[in-house]
Image (cartoon, rainbow, N blue to C red; front, side, top):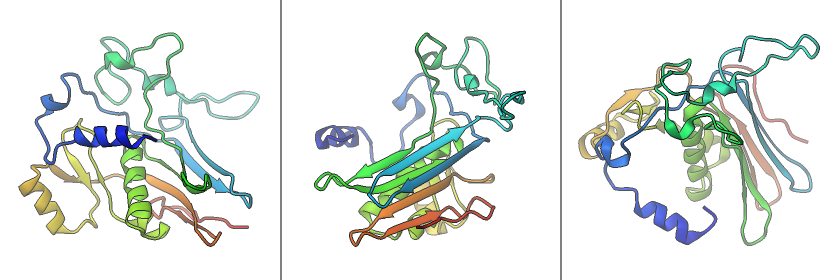
Length: 230
């Protein structure tokens, strides 16, 4: 995605309207929802950035604790598919995600650091938790912040959409204006449904041209989270 020609080619493959499922692939499987993920972003006084996502996958991971370290072991092997077996969330196996030597399971985790190609300096550090909704949440936040020039707070707090092909629906947060929902149903043939469970939680920092760092910790995490400065 660092080459304009490649990005332009990818964009050319995206039609203006949703297509029948067979248009995309004959073998589509859903992503596993996530229950044990957190993300942290940091930018120091020299402009170095860190974007790190950690996860134990399902709630309480493997439900096993190290007797010496006191940490909960993850169950990320369940992110792999196994022939003729559904995973813990009931999804059918995908051949592209079978266990093989030197292979990693498919994951939605997307810790991201964005640079200014002209100056080489960090412009944005962002990441999220929320299983398969991570990718769409990060993409929408980046677009709002860097293309629409919205503040980092407005970009993170804005209502979001999510579509992952399986199930064949487009999810939306209840704060999305109804006229947008009606437009997507009528002209884009989307199967719309509201997000009932917690949406993806985004953490983002933007390094401004004046050197100040603006940050936002997603309000969707119903705990006392807030960005810290120095």
